[in-house]
Image (cartoon, rainbow, N blue to C red; front, side, top):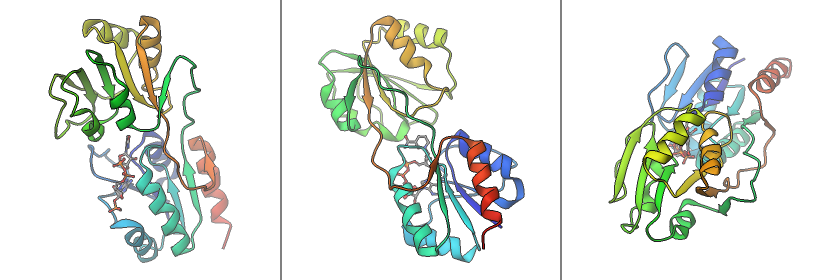
Length: 237
Ligand code: NAP
C-alpha cells in the first residue's frame, strides 16, 4: 500500500514519521522542508492534477493533514479522491473552544474592518494572510510569521519566529509593543495557544477568525487515529 499525506502541519509530519516507507508527504513548498521524510513539493495543478498524481503513483489512500485554513487543497483532495476512487481521511486538530470574550469574524477582511482606529495589533495569521490589513495605515501592526511576507502593512514591525511560544514570552512581547488587539485564526493546537491566554490576562481584545467550511469527509483529530485508519486500509481491497 502507498499513502499520500497532504501536509504543512506538525501533525502531517508526525504521521509521515509514524507510517515510514509506505507514506509520501506532500508540501506546498512555501516553508522550509523537514529532512529525512520522503516528500514531494509544490502544487499538483488543482484537483485534476492531484487525481492524476494519485493514479500515476498508485496511491491507495489519501490523508488530508493540511492546516484547517488551507481550504482550497482540502476541496481539491475531496474531489481528487473521488475521481481516483481511493479512500480519504482528514486529520485535523480540534478548534480552540470558543471564549465569549472573543469577537468572532468570518474571515481576515472582516477582522481588518473591525479593528478600531489607533489600535496596536498583534497579527499572528501567517505571512500569506496579511493582504487584508494593508489598506489600514491608521493602525500599528506587529506581524509575526515563520516566513517573511511579500508585503507588510505600512505601519508596524515584523517578527520571524517559529512556534511554540510560552505564556511568559507572549506576555512580555505584548507588553513590550503595547498591543491592544490580537487577530488570530482558530487554528487549534497547543503551539500557539499561549497568545490567547496572554491576551486575556492583559485585557487585550481578541478577534478570532472562524474556520472556513471544508468538504464533509471522514475526520479524525489525532495522529494515532490516522495511523489506525491507514492500518485498516491495508486489509481492504
Ligand atoms: P490552499 O489555499 O488550500 O492551497 C493553495 C494551493 O497550494 C493548492 O491549490 C495547491 O496547489 C497547493 N497546496 C497546498 N497545500 C499543498 C500540499 N500539502 N501539497 C501540495 N500542494 C499544496 O493552502 P494555503 O492556505 O496557501 O496553505 C499552503 C500550505 O501551508 C498548506 O499545505 C497548509 O497545510 C500550510 N499551512 C497553511 C496555513 C494557513 O493558515 N492557511 C497555516 C499553516 C500551514 P495546486 O492546486 O496546484 O495543487
